[in-house]
Length: 494
Image (cartoon, rainbow, N blue to C red; front, side):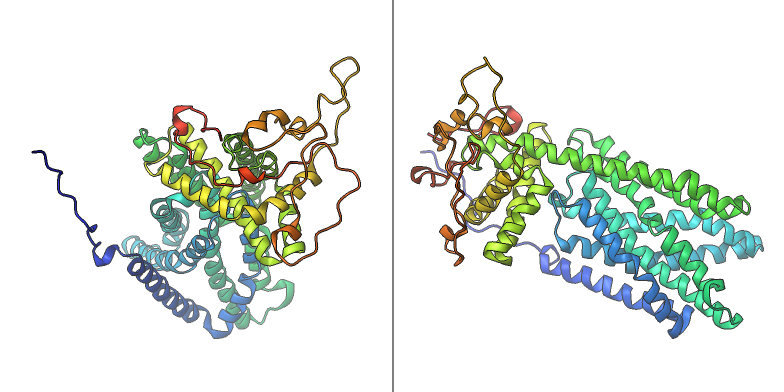
């Protein structure tokens, strides 16, 4: 008689060091200790007054840089806890490693060569770039390994690396500005002729993007590696290393610019740093536009399956439409509704990226589980998000185009899909009834129980307004059973 193989009734319990709270606690303790040590070291070198002056001046560019990187990450915003970790790692752990390693190496070279001036030059142009970029790259590596769901492409690498470098530059600026203030205290200089003013102008006004620019090259290497398939193990290992080497080289060129003569700094700044900054900015913005195009191309499959409304792929592929949807939700249903709409947009974007990875063979073994999680998250927020997205679709839709004389009847182009690539009749079988005058508008927030009066209906209903889900179509659609990598369409709603 055949017997079933024994299966454990309970999964094995993980070891204590594998539990999440243990890892979070250990990481938090490490960063806190590093922060206290770096605070003591910087205060010892600059003095209390110099530390406070340096802190007040160094904090000025931080909100602008964080806001810039957060803006780049608006298509699929990552969790704030990743950004907090990256900034804390750069400001505390990476800065502490750099101070200790640079001081030790410079002292050792000065003792071995009996040339303190040469040791300082070698330390600034060779040792510092290697140590500092390696310390900052460690944060990018940790996010890449342990927050893989949040690290899916070039933009994620740029944001992670840029925020880490912003934290590192923040601590370094405190040290430099505090020392400059101490020098001015000894010499009696003040105003625009002081060392503090010159240091502030060079480090905060002219080149606040210097450290982020270096480390972003490492982030791009990790981002391209994230886009590579699992079969290309060598490429996934070499690309981050190549980005790190480029970051070290650019950092060394920047630190060594003072050795190129009186105008060496300005020459490197104008001929190299500014063009590289412009090129990387263009690359990141182009990547962001490509991500929006991915949203527009991948989400129609879920429209066909009944999970999304016909207008949503194109609405979610427009940052302007997304902002209009959040504003509409906030105005009519409060901050909680606006937060739900923002979450809906983020989950839909993650779903599009997940499907693209699956279609290209880059999805992991948890593809189906992750897809189901995202679809469930969208479904739970649909009642709040769809009125806002419908409003954004109507506000940003192109005006109806009259047909050419002699080419079809006047009503042949009616329907929402004409302006967005979806035919109205194509959704008759998926819960969207095609009507001669277009689809009926989605009910406003007054119909969803938010306690706000519904706005007055317009006197004229355009032909491109999407339809609501009929009563028989409000049930949850079936989960997709076909992996996108197989190039099979999602099952249609019966």
